[in-house]
Image 1 (tube, one colour):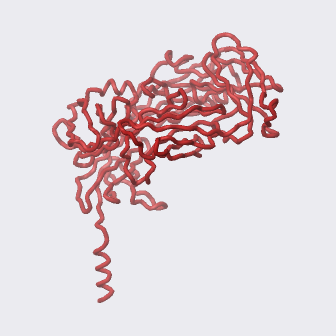
Image 2 (cartoon, rainbow, N blue to C red):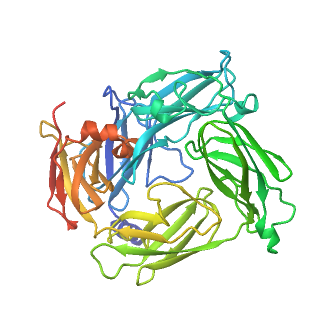
Image 3 (cartoon, rainbow, N blue to C red):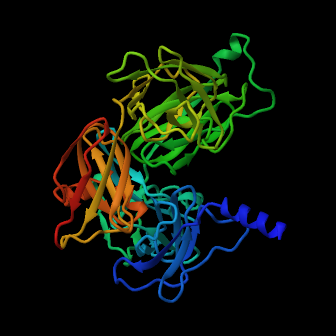
Length: 509
């Protein structure tokens, strides 16, 4: 009896478990999606993930007053949902709309009509970066097989531009160089490719050869004359890398201290001794030189080689509307995964120590623990020397990079609201996107009753958009998306801190 009483007392102290029932549906047809994998915060590593039944039904457990699920199924875009629930709450059924993937396939043929093996085809799209249009890669591309076939899958619907880079094919004939579909040298001459959700379309490349120009030069080692030694036994390997196509580089033939690059098409390049995929070491040889290639040969280029040295990068964080900035953690993360961090002082200054050459991304956040909400605003501008580096990977070479200046906006805003359809019914499983005048974006997820919470909003005028897939979050930088959906909702004025609850009603289709 005593053991039974102790068990009952212990059970009374256990928190009430809260479960959410939901259904996974195809966003285009509305049909249930069976055998979709459901992962959530309560999952145990090593345990099999539950799947939806034939009706698309699933049940997820809430943790810490929050339900967070990830839904995956072959042929669809991954979907993440995160929304609060009250302990013991019986919530309406959650509807998760899976968006069918778009696929672009095709073949690449050379000038003789033969299939090209080992080349790469990538999908690119225009995005607003620091207020400027820029053509960027969409995730990963596809390498052609022995039949010259490529397949780019897992894509959201949209407008893309296909880019070809020869890769291994350049070993067979270097006169085939980077092109845009169907066979254009410049992005402005490329033909766009529009693809819908669930659609698979085919586009073939028929390539032509181009002689290009020749670049010749020699290696100069001024530091060796000053008594500074390079790491012993390390040869200098050169590569001519395009600054317009991130995965396109040309081989450089070397003979002693002389070098030659042949069949170089017009464009902008960097002649360098290092690659982003290699981890630099202090003392290794390094050098890079910007080249603007036109229609004539470039002769007797001098590339200065010096030993790699770590540098310290000083910076300052400036807060708008505040006299004393809060401590912020500033991190430079290399593309290889390692990083360097510093915490800002009372005056906003900081120093990142021991930065080696490479490609980096800048991250800025509250210096407090990860569980503390961001309250001091979001970065508006990030500048390294005279370069804008916000929301992109950027190179740091062996020369002094300059000072790092980070501007943080006014304290952030929070919006609680409800999303309704044209008939006044709640809309669940949607992403409500807020885009500020400075192109700072924030979002919230609508729950089963249509309610949502959006944090980290920049105060001021906000444009509002509704999307159904996480990949579409990036569409707010797509000018075509902005043009098509800019009038879906009125522009709202958001104040710092908590705002009056917002009711959004979608237009009739």
